Length: 70
Image 1 (tube, rainbow, N blue to C red):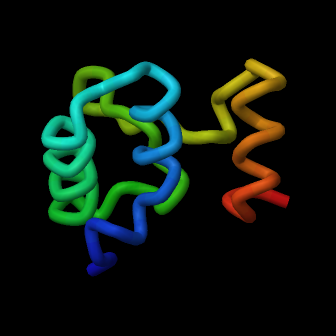
Image 2: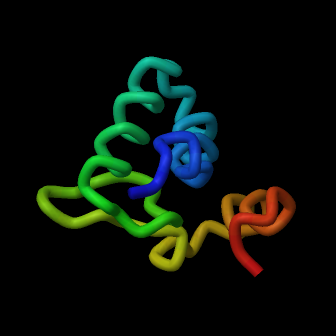
């Protein structure tokens, strides 16, 4: 099982949306508990959306800068 802090993409996504840190932390904990893909950014229904699903170039640029994607 991954550590909640391993879900750095959730932190990136949450920061871009100006989410409260408590919400980001809870989402990271949920992702770790469910074994979500490490590049998960949020959950829609029962499915984790990942960085691979993102088309926003600014988000992808920041993810590359942080070493979250190649």
